[in-house]
Length: 104
Image (tube, rainbow, N blue to C red; front, side, top):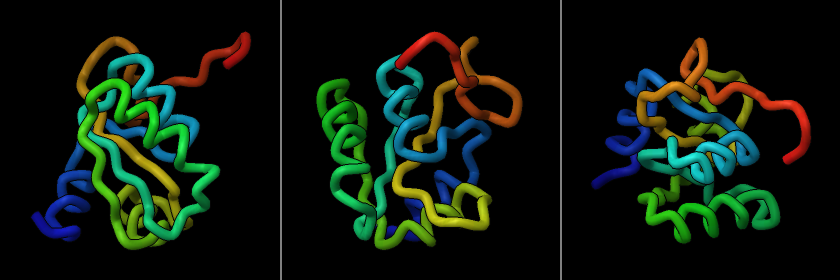
């Protein structure tokens, strides 16, 4: 599978998490179907995402750059990580995992 095909799946997703924190939270909640990380992202930022994906058995795809990952997510800046989300009650408007207050 090519990087372009992987990014096309992310681009076409109806629900996704964007950013390392939101992606790690989606994995922990069992809402991530597939996770993407940027090869040029800071290792300290994506390490928790990679570990969570591995621990939860979620497919991990490395893409070339944070810029390409951000564009696939429809944002004007780079993204270190993103995930295609499964449908469910924790997926909020715009296909994003809603923020929760009170820690984590």
